[in-house]
Each structure stands twice: as structure tokens, then as C-alpha cells.
Image (cartoon, rainbow, N blue to C red; front, side, top):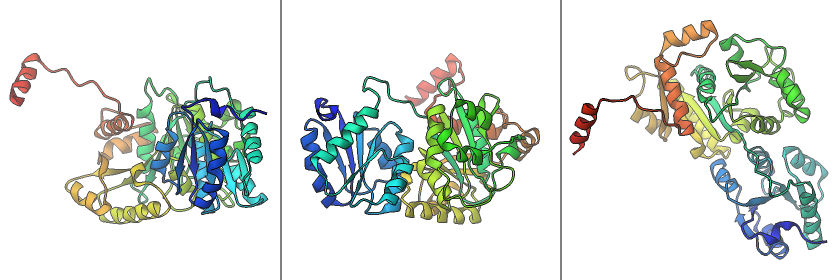
Length: 401
């Protein structure tokens, strides 16, 4: 039987994520023999999120081999991350032995197939031909996936939920016609409170049926409000553990359905919140310029970094910024050892009125304008500048001369 159609396309590439070089040395000759015209991209460590995003954006990437036993938990999180970011990319996990429990865990995280040492040409061919039977034809247009923003507080009461709610509305634009705001803080989520919404269903129901989600069920779970869909947290905290919640599966479905997904999360700590941070394209970490908030945000950054999150994925957002109170921008950047991505002003009256009305803050307010500017920075949108008179334009030009 002929090998997988990999071998006829010079532009096709395979990603190998394998910290164990002995395993890589076993596999590479077999893959090269099976697909001699395919470029192999070897990575001898588990890449952080930013590096992974760049690797997955490689043109012509068709397959990923992932060795999972060097650091099992890291590799399992990485499997879920790849599956969420690139749902159409087959993931073949590399195992040292036939461990049914580990195989099942890998498959639940999004793996497509597995190879067991010692690797053989027949085993590789059988696995790739099985994948080929279930893959869409190469002529199909790749699936467009939503950009996923996770808004996370560096410390409680920094206003992260207000930012998430308003950002979701401001991200809706001609290029982003379908936007989802997901309150994925099942214990203390307050999106429903801020926007005065009630629903019989919540994110917990979505997680309970994640393997059976379809368009009809999804319409029941979300609340369409002013042009965006909103998935709420439950009114009462759920009983039991969140260990079995499939964040990757839920977000994979959401990213296929929408153009933009804004996730309102709890603090960074715990497996659930850490999974949300890892799965996001960009993590907006929200703080204020007050000392207690900055101290807590320092610890959050250390925790995220210690758990493999790439600092390039994190956008520092300072809310309720006032030069008259708290630290100034240079001191904040020195304390947090990173550049501030965006600052939002203290605009108490506009935010409180919007909360009482259950609506987003008006774009004409100081806070509304700043959130719109944040949305523009995240998407690279350019808003048209206000027209200036010819005389003022000439004066400006001569001033530069």
C-alpha cells in the first residue's frame, strides 16, 4: 500500500516535539524514509506558548509528533494546547510502552494517533495511513479559528471583568462579525451580574456536554445580547472538582464557531485557570497601580512563568490608572519587569452608571474610548484620524522641516 501522500509535496512539513533525543534518533530515519521530500522541524524541548504559536503558523505544516513521557503533565497540557490552536493538525504521541491509561489521557487531550517503541516502518506507515483516511482533502481551505483573548486579574477587584465585558463589544467589527464573551470563572464569575442577565444554563452545562456540542445545543447555552453571544458562569458554585473539565475541548469548539473569543477568567492559580491561560493567544493580565495589586501581580507573573507560560504571550494592562495615586508607569514596568501594553483611566461614574443599566460603558466616555483603543491595539485596526484643515496640516509639515 503506498505511503501517506506526504512524500509527493516538497512544501509540506512535520513538527517533532521531542525532549528525548534517543526517541528522536529512533523516529527520524523512519520518517525521512517514509517521506523523503518532507521537511522535518525538530524541537528538543517542550516549547512555551509563544514559540508554539510561531511553530504552528509554519506554512505547509501537516503533522505533529509529540513525545509525552519526558514530562507527562507538561506534554498533556501541550497536546491540549496544540489541539485547541490547530484543530485540523494530527498529533501522533510517542510512547515508550503500551500504557492504556496514558494513551486514553492523550486521546482525551486531542491526540490523533500513537506510536509505541520500538518504532518500526510498518507501525509508522499504518498510523499515517489511518490518519490519511480520516483527514480532509488537501485542497480544502484550512479552518479559520477565532482569536482567543483571556482576561485575567493579577489580583482580585482590579476590574478585569469590566474590561472583558467592554472589550468583547469593542472587538465586534466588520472583520469580527461573530464574537463570544465567555465567563469561565465558574466559582465567582460576575458577567451575569454586570450585564443583568439570567439564564437557566451556564458554562458548567457546556462542559458537561462538550463531546456533544452542536449548533442547536449551543443556541440554548448562550445569550445573544447586542450583537455578541455570552456564555455565563452558574448562579450557584458547582459541586465537585474541576479536574475533569475539558477546557481545551470547549475552547476548541468556540474557536471554530466565532471570529473572536474573549474569556473572563478567575485568578491564575489552579489547573483550570492555568489551562485557560495556556490556551489563549494573548493573555491580558490586569492590575492597578496600587502597591498591593502590583505585589500580587508580581507573584502571578512568577507563577505563570514557572508553569511554562511565555512572557511574550502576556499583555500587562493597568486599570484605573491615576498619576496622582499609586506608582507611575516607569516604576510599574520596573516592578513587573515588563512593558505596560495599555492603561485604562479611572472613570468611576461612567462605569457605575453602565453597571446599573446592565450595558457596556459608552464609547464616548474616557473608559469607553480607552477600551476601544485597547481593542484597536490587539487587532491592529487603524481608526481614521479626525480631519484637519489644510492650513494646520501645512503648519505641521513645515514644523517638521
